[in-house]
Amino acid sequence: MALAVAFDKQAIRRRFERAAAAYDIFSVVQREMAERLVEQIEREPSSILDLGCGTGYLTALLLERFPQTQIDAVDFAPAMIEQARARVPDANFLTCDIEELELEPASYDLIASNATIQWLTEPERTMAHLVESLSARGELQLATFGPRTFWELDEVLRELGCERGLNLLSAQKWETLLAGAGISRIRAQSCEERFSYPDCAAFLRSVKSSGAGYTPHLLAPGTLAEGMRRYDNMFSNGSGVTVTYEIVTLSGER
Image (cartoon, rainbow, N blue to C red; front, side):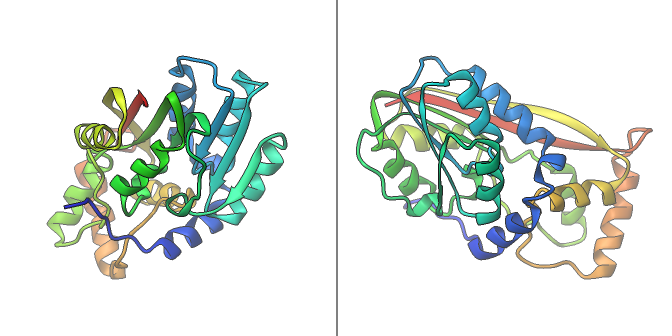
């Protein structure tokens, strides 16, 4: 059975629309992921597809490293595309859900994506379709978040009988999925990074301000307040609270 994830895409798009102006301020982790992704590219491509380009941070890094390369960048939030176009006027931008892209076969030497593929509702089908647009020996470079991301918050929510509703795939599951889509020489890696915030409220504000604060069901105000209190007590590090991100990097070729 094909893997499918239930997301309210319209709600996600609205969140990123609202977050576009402030996204770069709050997306510290995403910027670090983009920088690592660009460093891992093995060959100079003549054409690049940047999936979920957001405000264009990765797009700009790609063009800086490969100034002669044609870059097409896609995002489903028009406000994000507006920010990206201002940042990287020499790239081509398209406002579209990447799961609905119509692509020519073998048209890109590199497909890159940062902090986006966790939002795919049909990852198997979508990746198989995207791989068809890679040239022979075309390269795939992806960075996303693994299931240990925000495990502290998940623990607090479980105690309260709630859940975030965001089931992130492990590096191993992504590796299996990419192999099924026709990718070879796959390298799937995972690492955990811990960040400190003044308190749980500051952590949640930061996530919301980046557009990534997806919850299908709103918590009651009393439940939310109790959850923040528990988080502050359980995960204090002396100067604030600890938040874990699991960063998954994936690469391979057609």
